[in-house]
Every structure is written in C-alpha cells, then in structure tokens.
Length: 206
Ligand code: FES
Image 1 (cartoon, rainbow, N blue to C red):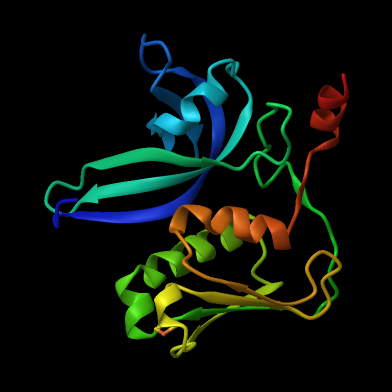
Image 2: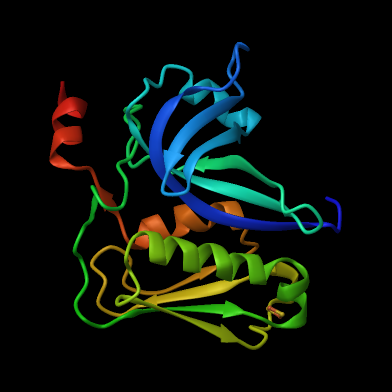
C-alpha cells in the first residue's frame, strides 16, 4: 500500500441498495449508510456468498477504509460478513439487533499488547477495529480496552487477552495470538453474541 494512504478497519452498517457493476460475480455493491450512499468493493473470497442478496436487507460488514492523505479520496472494501448464522440472512443493524445479555455488570477487559513487536505487526489497527466494533454495538459500558506492555510471547504478535469474569459464554481469560484486524469482529462476536431480530428469526425459520 502506498504510504499516502491511511488504512482503517471498521464496521459498516446500512441497507443494501443493489449492485454497482454488471459483472458475474458482482464485485461492487451500493449500501445506504448514515454517510449516504457508499460504493463498496467486496473481497474475492466473499463474493460467492453474497450474489443472491436482495436490495433492502440490512447489512453489517467489517470493511477496510482507505483514505488518500493527499486527496481525501475514500475507498471501501468488505473484508468480512458479520452474519450471525449460516442461513444467508444478512445481519440486522446494531439498532435493530440486540446483543444476547449474558453478563453481569462486571465489565469485560481486553488487554491489547502494545509492545514493539505487536505494534510493528498492527496492534494499533486491532485497537481501532475493537473500538469501532464496541461503539457500533453499544458495548462501551460492558467492555474496557487496555493497552499493556509486552506479553512475552513476541513470536505470536500481535496479541490480546480478553478477560470476562462473569461471562456465561466464555468465562475467564482467553488469549488471542497473531490477530489480524479483519478477525477482530469474529473474536468479539464470540464474547458478545448477536441475536437476530424477531422478524429475521421468523424468516430464518421458514
Ligand atoms: S510485544 Fe507483544 S508480546 Fe511482546
């Protein structure tokens, strides 16, 4: 990537408007978000999974945003589908979905290593992606992110430890190694499962 680009991994929530190209399989989609209509490229490995999507469904995607530091031009690429099931039903927006309540008031602590090896391998991006997910799903009261010094397993950088004392899903400490930013959503979804809205649950059952 050019040094003139800033790269961020963040959730993208909105309504699928249709395809932005005539290719088979489609590579670009249009999505209506709070920023307006966005054109988004879909990673090659994900394209087979989305070709039968119908306009109007709500999507939650993990996207990579590239912003040119010189021109301000912005490009979006879908890196991961945050689908909560295997049915092909797209996930609802955070406003329409709800997180399964499994924890008491004791917050989950996420310690992200910011030692030099982890920083070199992208721990800053991992923090950004975690923060974006937490804000998108309104988890700020339930999760605390801490930057910590070297966890002494630098060969497995970047690393993070999630501690959920009261979780019924994954209680105790879970150590994640060699984390990639596009896996952050999957990691957090394990600790904070997303429930389908009742309308979607009915459609899924049909
Ligand atoms: S720098 Fe992160 S484990 Fe050593």
